[in-house]
Length: 393
Image (tube, rainbow, N blue to C red; front, side, top):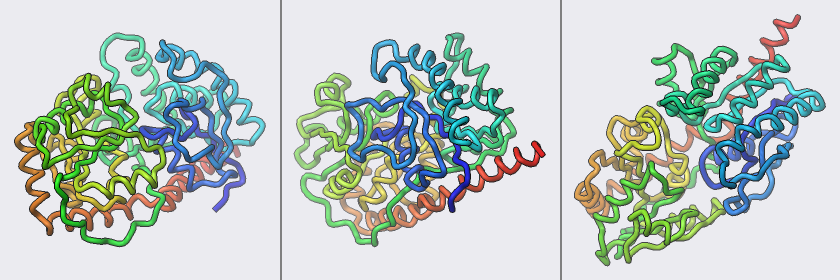
């Protein structure tokens, strides 16, 4: 289905990058036509761009300082001004019908909100993380959050969330009715095949960035396998071995490489025996509400790789509840290295368990098929545009 007028999607960086919101945006626009959407954002960081080329939809690249420079927190906010100017020009010249503003970058959210105020076009706000709850204190970012989020909630035709956990949180905390719009999986689920018997060493894979939301769990994993030659840990991450050593998540049985191509990454994950999916027990940089409501986009690569997933996080997190509900991963809600080692031994010895986890993971992917997610978004855009036209008439 094609729209007569496109909607404007404000993002921090034009995809593709291999993690975070960029992955969500990139997978979504793969299900939209060039007549349906126009992107407005900055150019992705050169060192972390994926090998998937430019997006197949129109993209307006904001003329501003490149990403990745020192002082980026401030330059991002100042970059709202050129983003609004170029966004307003795009709306005028392309006949845009609605605005979809992305978060977790407050700059793209603020850009979308200001464009809504300037043009009167319907605003939809797509939250991939919690915002105000994750900006406590009296700093300037917290002040902006306390000013911006209530105004976005009031102005938006609809709030969208990338997880059911966030939708539940917003309903309970603010009384809003978000639309749960998940990350897309743009490949049909492959046929089920029982995973092969584990090798020796047992090959454990971790894919994604390594930051404060993962490090304590990865340290526990490294402690659990130590230098035991019957285990090996394979990092697929942009971070270097030097960095991994500096944060204490390295041992002699580790390796690291960055694979920017998604298909190649899934293939490499298939060569492993267990896929590790951690989320911190030691909340530091983010709020506990944020950790308890988020979901890992790397889950989808793990499902497609058809290998058993070991989830490591507190049991009340949405991530743990999701995997337990659908039976698509073995959840360890104990932060200790000994609990992880017990789980690894269980997976190594349990052929039926491994097969069940893989089978259920493939079944889950049907919920995230890109065509279904895109239709949900089209319906919301059409509803917002129709409401605007009714009001105008």
